[in-house]
Length: 423
Picture (tube, rainbow, N blue to C red):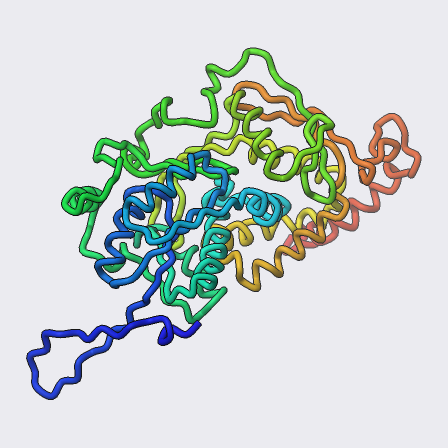
């Protein structure tokens, strides 16, 4: 996309030296902002118009955050947006982003199920589509210069259109803190609801809810119980366990207790079931891509159930060496998602391998849910590699026990040589 065609030249003034040519700064006529309705993006609309003399299109992606998006659209207009576009992306999010990631069993640093990280490439892609349709010269986001989201958004933007101008206000403007933004909003009568008393920030979508900042910046402070929105505390969960069955076809969950659901509806249903039993809470200190450690608290009830069920079906259907190879690549795959490389060739290459391994992963897992715990209590598959007649201690139809001695001797050969060396 040509920026020249979409921009107006503004001549910089104030040069004292003679014969110095004025610097020409290209300002976009139209900017598409990834808008959430929070303090940052509310201030950004006004700031963009004052700083760049442009019109602003506020783009809001509905990923299942549960907010009233009509109110968000109204708020964007009140804060100065020239146009507001809201896109319902829940179905796409579940089928084309969450399910591929779940097929890969992606977990970052042992416990984070990547609910925020996986949402950013979809938002960025949809935002770029709006920018193209609106003939905008730039895109903008409200991510801070200390976080991961700035990387995730901008890697996606540039993978889709390397020529797009990117505006990251937190790396440009004069504000240094949340209180600065609130003061600015008050001075310019920007309608906001944020206050300095808010103890943490929240990000929610179809897959999870995350909490960070504020009181959570002290990793020794226990998260307050009233903070959680998707899960009850394990102490307050039902005293009676719940047993459910999740069916898979080629690595994708398709039904719960025999009832089929769309990808998005299935995740929502599992969120309800898991949340009611206190399942899916994670409190961790993670390593951000830019090198900063960050404390985050997450709720991913449905995702936690899906990971357990998926592993259970895989335990029956995946060959040992395929499983070992795939599991060895999970940390790398998870890092690609976490760091913002969803649209990279290496992630796409890995996705092909992950998906290929799922051809046999069809079956049913039975889970018991009880006070924050998920227990696998059954699994079955028409493609099961588990053969009772082979594994049973009661029979030895293949003379495995007789052949085991030779197997052990051959595998011990190098150890015997090593053990006898120098003796």
